Image 1 (cartoon, rainbow, N blue to C red):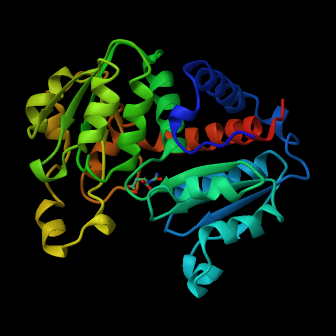
Image 2 (tube, rainbow, N blue to C red; image 1 turned 180 degrees about the horizontal axis):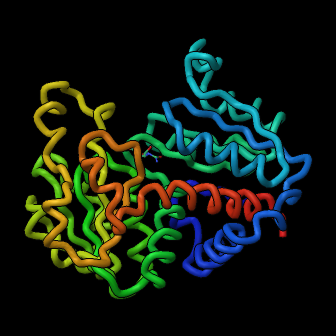
Length: 304
Ligand code: NCD
């Protein structure tokens, strides 16, 4: 039985195949309308979410399946002190596949050890978010026509931003990708991402605090929100929250065909004026998120 805990659970070939299916779903959705008839997806969200949970539910409903779950840990038995392992053993009896989000890093791995059905990590603390990565990869592939040989800038909270960690994991498996890491000193990418991922794969990268200087060389700009919920101090969050704000003015020095991605939710880091710029791809990303999750659910359930 296969799970998706980290994007590295899949090979490049498996990811490419998933993206192919997702692209086909985007044009031939009807063909897939009954693929998961009589199957049940459980969405267990121990941490808030709008997009990810609803996109999983929308994905399963569009495959003809059903969904159940909770969107607030306080309304589940974990508020009575139940362990993740016990909750998963129980929910495995009610469902065919589980998508879970949890504030603790590694919780989906723990879940996978007591589950009898596939587990999808829908975000674990500041660690990983592999289904957002599938979404990001499909968006880059659609916009750039390729997943090799480009320069990508990651900007914002690279320390706690789990979508950043997972996307770097995925891009490290490809060729010719150069990474520019743009963040305040306090929110730099964790050392393990440098040593165990980028260095290990010989990936070229540089670190800077200066977004404007970095902009002209980027083919893709991946903006992120400062992750308020992972800070120990409110003052520290307030000090760092507006470190970067992308505006139309700053974009004048960027490439005309640069793609701007953001996993959303956006707070202040992209001015709403940028939404009408043709380089803005973040709402297209949302749509792609549904297609990749449809493809993923089918793959993990072994549906052809
Ligand atoms: C991201 C997350 O949950 O990590 N959101 C999402 O799933 N699209 C990014 C974020 O919360 O900033």
